[in-house]
Amino acid sequence: MSNSKLYHIYPTMKCNLSCQHCFLHQEVRDQKERMTQEEFRSLVDNMANDFALDPSAKFAEVTIIGGEPTLMPPSFYTKNIPYLRKKFDETNKPISLTIVTNFTTTNALKRYAHLFDIVSTSYEWDRFDSQKLILGSNSSKKENWWKNLKEWTGEGRKVAISLATTTETIENWEEMFELLYSNGVRFFQVNLMHPDGELMKGILSDEDYEDFCSKRLSILTDPMEKMNHHYKAKDNTLWPSFEKEAEFLIALTLWLDKKDDKDLVIYPINSHKECLNGGTGNSDIACPASGALCVTTTGEVSGCTIESGKPNMISYGNAFKDDFQEIVNSELRMKHTMSLDLKPVECLGCEYYFFCKGGCSFRELFWDRSNPNAECHGLKSYFEFIKNNYQN
Ligand code: SF4
Ligand code: SF4
Image 1 (cartoon, protein in one colour):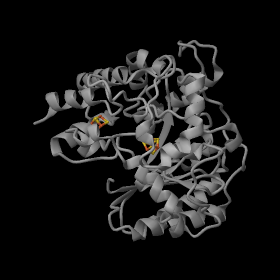
Image 2 (cartoon, helix red, strand yellow):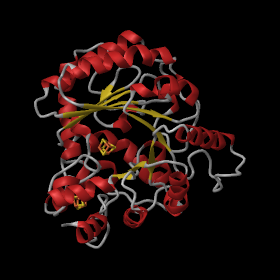
Image 3 (tube, protein in one colour):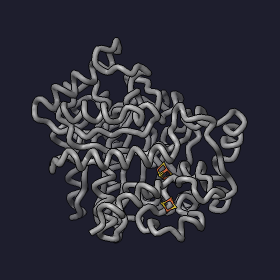
């Protein structure tokens, strides 16, 4: 576990879009309109207290996410974010505060964006529809997104673009990065795809998906159970192979070098270069669940973001009803995080284990460990590329 804590708050699960890669089930989105100010503040009190009580936690990443958080009235943030800052400041430890928005309603956002350290929005090539044309497409959502982005960066504001390694994105990555770069984006966060829910349904055959659904809970909470499961994607329409993801990260590393722009940052590439040189771990690829507390609009708590979007999520307790430290110390949390942290023997002997920590357990289900030449879900060949080319 790294020395950062992750606190994710979902003030609302409602959204004005319906995206293909969204991890939130419709049922979850409809459960409750929004958190009240009292609920938000009591959650902040509990999270700040948890951060203060944990001597190993040196830094906290606090994220306001949804749903679409800008659907909350602006006064929710102008009143409550200074409260959040004050509570976390009292811990005398640093935090980074992010709001994740779909960037469709930036007028309201402009009123309180300055209260956050990072404004982040996601973009994949097929973010709003399956059309391959961005400019000149008929998609008003896409046009609106681009209009807002250009206006935002044109006013000298910063934005982080977070993107998932969808097949469409990997196939069109260079054009997409050039377009975003030429429109003023200098901060990118690349997220490897974490299959579950609708995405898992699209990746697996009907038979495998049924098998996964019936065993999901035991795979994720019984440390010995998940080693017995291996699935194979039926095709790569939605999710590229691990090989393609590794090739993409290597090409992107070379693109970053070619730009030679000290203001340009691509996570996790920049930090991987540093980590491999320094021999230290970080949380950019390692599973963060054991140091994370994600709380949904209804108050349910889990360590894995993916759980927050599921109707039958693995919930350690309810932050609005139960004692927060009892939730933190619950048996289910221990079983869940132990299971996610347990890695196959191939990982334990791997020279990159010190910072990869065996990666994501959902991805691990697709790693063909019986084939020594198969790319792993942590993307070992990309690590090798970084080591061979950037180690001092
Ligand atoms: S298992 Fe870990 S890495 Fe995978 S989605 Fe959950 S928190 Fe993230
Ligand atoms: S690089 Fe691959 S084999 Fe090595 S620890 Fe990560 S997932 Fe395991």
